Each structure stands twice: as C-alpha cells, then as structure tokens.
Image (cartoon, rainbow over all chains, first blue to last red; front, side, top):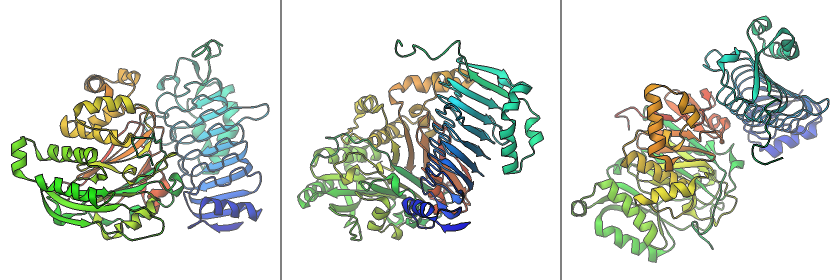
Length: 240
Length: 363
C-alpha cells in the first residue's frame, strides 16, 4: 500500500496523486482536503487525520477507511463502494446517495441520509453507531438508514424532525417506537424478527469493522419507519 | 465602482475562533494558521480578524481603526473627532507590504476618550455616544470608515485571503486572550475593504458564514432605534441586533440567542413551565429580530465569545477544547490546525448558543 503524506498538499494535488498511483494508498496527515477519492471505482484508501468535505463524493466502487473524524457531506451522491468512518461525521452524510454502504462508528450531524434514493438493483445503506442529529432521513426516497444509539453519553438517539418529507426507503432506530417524535406522514412500528433479518448483514459488517459485540447490539428493541403510502406528500404545494 | 450598499452581496465563508478561559495571551499566528485548511471556503475577496486584549497599555481608551480614501477625508474626520474626543494617540496601523494585498487605503488607529464636557452636555453615557459617533462618521464623512471602535480590542480586515490579511497586518506581533477570523466568499463584490468581516461596533464583533433571508425585516426593525444599515450585509444587521438586545435591552447572551435563533413554535409547545414562558415571551416581543436562513456566527465581546448556528443548522460549525482554550470553526480541520490534540470535538445543535467567558479578573 502506497503512503501519501498530505501535509501542505492542496486538495487538487492530493487527489491527483491518488489518481495517478493506480494503487491502494494510505493518506497520512490529512487536514481538511476536500473531495478525497471522489468518483473512484477501484482500489482501497485509508485516511489518517481529518478528511475534508465531500469525502468519497460520487464514489463508484472503492473502499475508504477514515481513522478519525470526517467533515460534511461524506459520500455525497455516492453510487457504489464502501466508506468506513472510525469516528464522527459532520452534516449531510450520504447526501443523495443511490448505492454503496456507509458505516459510521460514532455519531452523525444534521440531515444524515438526506434525499437517499434507490434505483433498480441499487440500494444505499447507511449505519450510524452513535446518534444522529435533527432532520435524519429528510426527503428520504429509498435505501436503508440504521441508527444504533450506542453512544450512551447522548440523551437522544436522534434530534428533532426525523423523516420529514420521507417518501421511500426504510429507517431502523435501535430504540422503542414511542421514544421519538415523528412526523404524521410515516408509519412507525416495533421491528419484528423478519424486519431485523433485513439489517442483520449490515450490523454484522459494522460490528466486525469497529469491533463491537454483535449480540449485544441485536439484543435490543428496534423501531422501523416507512413512509405512509395512505397519506402521501401530494398536493401540498401544487395541484398535481 | 459600486460600493457596498449599492450592490447586493451574498456570501459563503469560513469562520474560526479561539479563546483562553484563563486569559492567557496568544499571538495572532495560530488563528492565521487555522484559516489555511479552509482556504477554499474563501475566494480572496475579503479576510479579517478580531483580537481581544491586544491594547493593554491603552485599555481605558476606545481604539478607533479607520480606513480613509485619502488625506482630505482623514483631515475632515480628525477635525470632527478633535471636537468631542481626547485623542491620546494617532498613528498608522503597521502593515507589511505583500504582493497579495493591493489597493491599500490609508489605515489609521486612534486611541480616544469622549470629553466629559460633551457627555454631560448631551446627557449620554459613554458607549451610546461612541456608538453614535461611529454611525455619524460612517454615514456623513465621505471616504472615512470606522471599522473598529472597542476598548482593548481591534479588528483587522482587508480584501484578500485571510491568511494573507493576517500577515499584512503583522498579527504575530499582537497578543490577545481571544481571536476570531473570517474568510469571505462573496459571489459578487465591489471588493471594498470595509465590507470584509469582522463587523464591529464598540467591543462587539461578528464573523459570519451564511446568507440570511430575514435581512429586510430585521433592518426595518433595527433602524427604528437609530442604527443605519448602509452596507447591506447580513453581518452588519446582526451586529446591531446584538448591540440592541444586549447593551440596550439588557438581555443575556442566552436570551439573545433565543431571539435571533428562536425555536420553532412546535418545539416551544413541547417545553414546560418557565422555559415555555420564556421562549414564548422572547419570540413574541422580539419577533422582528428572528434571523432566518443559514448562518453560523461567532460573536466576540470583552471577555468572551459566543458561537451560534441558525435553528435549522444550515451551516457547519464545530467546537473543541484543550487545556484552558476553546476552539470554534467552520471545519474540524481548522481546529486541528491550531491544536492537533484538541478534544471533546462536537457540533452544537441549531440555535444552541456556545458561550465561553474568560474567568473574572483574568482579562
């Protein structure tokens, strides 16, 4: 694995080095460089330090591991591949992603999973180990969002107004259904055994990656949220 | 060329700040460093800094920093000042000529105190009189612009990238207990030095990242109280709102935050007891001072800093700490540039004010 020292490199220089090496690479001393590995289809990347905004934007198959916190818009419009963040992420993680998987060990800021979507065989997955900020899954149109609430220092698993504008996809929160205030336009239910089967493989990946006890994670109540198709977002603004 | 006030300037931006709770002094070097990883948040059309505790030898005097277009405007302004102020020192602000910063105006600094006779004749308290003088110079003396007017603090700003502006003003030669910084990204600007941030009145200074949509509603209200918004920048109106609420209305900083980033009615509805009454009162009485649209700001004042996001948190802001210091910035990378070992990194929620004060007697 090639080592690239990012100290004093601008984001263009750093991304050019990643692009030209055609190889797996570890980036050290990262400090806020944006668009790291944007659009990459192959190779594995490890980032040491603080990755800048839009890490793995348009990612198309590569795997990225960040040993540290990441900033805003991780995996923006991502299409395929995997991103593992061994820390916290800023706002709008997985913004409009339509494929691939994002795993965050810690907590996410506001608007995680905003406008996630799915298309044919494409189904994006996002697992957040800690808690999520307000507007989780805002305008969610597809895919799967899972929040585990493993950070016991946080009072709430999610901030205000989760699932606002949700009209597709599914969300799982590792908490009781009545512990969170949802909009009236989603169905909120206790997750059954069958429901949980769907997320088990991803929880397993999360636990292996971040060395978390899987049985402890699964041995808890989960809430599943889906859009209420009987009460859709229709004719709210215009008559169509 | 159209100056600010004649053309609308929406802006992006980067902000950063540091404060020592023990009042330990830091040079401006570290805050300049914090702006480097955020270089791409600015476009070279404005950068600036505010330092607190930097003029201990003149701490009882208001430090006026003034841009002049030429010596005619300088003479006019100085003769106006001499009428009602004791001027203990007048000098050029020291700069370093660098190729990155051009079209430099005359940049002067005055340490002044209002004459007691003037204050007693007008029956005004000192701060009100100084604030009125600043408004008067900025509105009535063509070619003169007071961009800093507090005690023991100073604003340094220019057209350029913030890290260059910091070198230009030789901020490594100043020592302060707190610093704020701003990098500007206006999409359309006449590139006027006065339009850079921080924007300051008395010891309040604001750095701001955002674009507020309530500007006109806020401006109409605040102009009823003698303020003149002549720059059409969001930051100017926020500075006046804070001066009005804190200095003139006597609100605490928390209450001020609850006015400008008030919770939604639906959120207030869920509160109980005293809190519910308080939020309802503040939103009702000062409804015209609710600031909507995206913003993250850092307010500097004598002895402290307050950081605040809009209630929807449409801009990023991160806080961290190490020993006696607290760091605030648009990006974690900026905090790490100042202090690689910063801990307790977190992003405050929308509308959640982060207030850090220097210990009493340490500044």
